Figure (cartoon, rainbow, N blue to C red):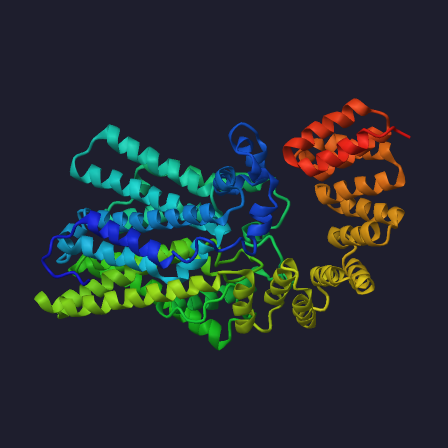
Length: 627
């Protein structure tokens, strides 16, 4: 309902509306399955299966020190509900709602600064905060950062980013009003702590010190650059992410990439080409913020290689124009213009600063992803809301203000409906990738992932055409050949499966997956145990932590009667295989045939806790007389 001018604004009411609206528009996401990169990051990530890995052991931190906190929260979710997606989605939504409340709190705090208290709309600060946070909670462009489980990395980093700014504002506002050294020091410590936590969530937090300086310059009139005791600790946080990157062997663009699962084969972009492309990507983000139509999880975005092209030049002109508007507003507010226009100027700066890590000169495999706009969107929404309210209060005085407010709230309803509808696309892998393939027909990845989804549900006849279509787009992609082989194998078309695996190996000889899958064909379907052993050993050669290959290599050894080889293979790796019933079973079988019955019985005892059926099989075997 539109806010009537003069009505007292109540933060608890605004907060309740934000929370209720958020729950309503995301209520159809609680049972969305794990999708896309959720597989390698959560479902197949053994590190998150023990909270102790993050609290008392080093493996949780060593797994990805740059994103330690999100993986820790995944471990908490796993401890509570294993692989039930409900808990993961509730956690994601709670972060989004908290972020919306932080947006509201920051926007309100800004009106307590000395500069904005002089604004003619200073009494409407709570209303402006409400408008900004409504846009943040309801906009459909936020769905990828909320509904896509693994992108908790983005929303969690945003939460700590916003908290860092919030505590900094509290410190500066207290210093202006009634300086209290102890309380100011506490706020400063809180801001610095949240800065580090944000940087341990995702690399986008690298820009927090820059945002802090921009905030101070825009709203306090005195740069903290002149206060070493404040600025130096923030500048030192610039070292957090680079220190984490020192031991990383992958290129920085790959480290910043949001995708670890199936990817398309792309030629590496130069920094110059990536920058030119990102000019047009930023223009697309701005268009999506204004008109969120044809959203897509996998854009088929053209790469730009020359500055002298209309899309690049027009996008660059748009970016420079917005930055010029920000500079103009900051200058004019010093000369009599309503100081609230500084909110618009600051929002523009926030947008570009927050986007700079992923949309500048560090080439990332995927040039565009919607969740990358989640953090920058606060700046865009603050900028728009401030301009909207300043213009509305100027031309619609008194009760006539209800007209633009009604239009704004109708727009919020439309955005909320669009968010609910967009979330429905995420209901399954097949619906998600059907949507993507219809919007990006020239891109292989939607067809690959749709084929994988069909194969996972046993619909191999539907999977194969998708893999073949992907091959028409990328005939040299070894992952597609491997997945096609899996689909043929699932249908029982053994010869076609073997040919697909062999072609995958020919394309990329150090790719472990087709070796493993060939080993399964030889082990299970053809009983060619020596060939199976060779394939599994090659898979392990190219991927040292390929635990499925270890287990099946042990099974092949047992079939050959090479029981000592089974023990020598599994015992040194038992720490990583201790929860796998197939590994315990194969080890127990080997112990039995080696006459080490006590150790075979020990494995049977372990199996009773994790797989009673296999335990019964092993016990039945150990009761027999050893040959």
